[in-house]
Length: 239
View (cartoon, rainbow, N blue to C red):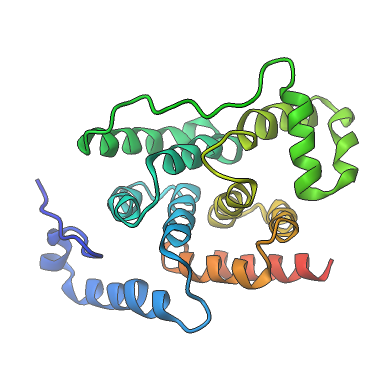
């Protein structure tokens, strides 16, 4: 089994085979990026954003190594679970499932009993109504009629927003931040990313905050998708 170092250190195996690269990467990701003036994020939000980005880009091995650090830094098991659950709406079950397994394995390793406490707040009868309310709060009053334009938009309101955004464990602003991370990291979703950048801003996650999120996630998703996200944030800020 590969031994592992804590506090930013990844598998010892890479130090033996790729030490020069690891030194460059860690100096950048764990020091330069984290400490960049004006781009700092509080640890809990930084790790939550990074985990969401790793789910979005399908970085399972990096996720496995960052998850313990996130939990040690104050991201709660409920927050991690809620983040992974919400990913099903933006990546689909097939791409979300490996991360749910990794979270369960890490929580079990820590002796945390599963399942965790339920966080749902809606019923089958009111999930559409509550989902529409969440959409309107995030994107504006015009969303109250959007669900009527077709069954996909009705599912979006009832399932994505009614089943998930209404859950406790993360507030709406945190949920919009992780959605921004999912979309930014997977790429090819720039129209949706621009829309959710605006949704973030409507909830108080302003342009400066989103730039911090992009900056802290850049080492894990690369420059092209990060620069695309910057453009989407600027476009949302101008709208």
